Image (cartoon, rainbow, N blue to C red):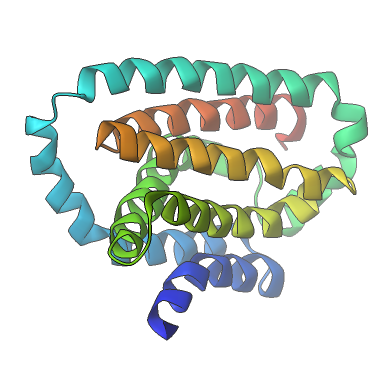
Length: 215
């Protein structure tokens, strides 16, 4: 059980050390994505071959794309409509500067959020951890656990990004997204729908960043 606990908490530990202790977004990205890649590499190789024989893939792609478009508009629309209540733009811009995250990193932010982040997060939580937990637990418990720990480290970031109590409440849609992507993994026996939906959701986050936080 110690091994499982470390795997579940590892991403949050990387975020806590890089962002809270060292106060550096570039370092946080290196630690966090390095952890995900370390444990997801074997799952990535195995799943590529499985895609060729998945009869549910076409339907899953349409589901992932449609859900992703909905998530994109919900993220950008909600934050835009309630931005004054959600955060203090000037304070947040200063926080990004303190984290060594400024306009010079824009291209890297886009590449990471649109490609690296959805791929590695989905392979880690909805493939690597999903497969491990499914050996001992039911589908529902597996999806609940992976969604909980997936949302846990988002809380460590949201604490700084939004006003109280929005920063705490914002974890709820993250958890629900994890549940939906876990269901996609189970229903379509593929990560493609979840990855596609995740990419479009992250595009919504990028649009929010460009509109309010770009410094």
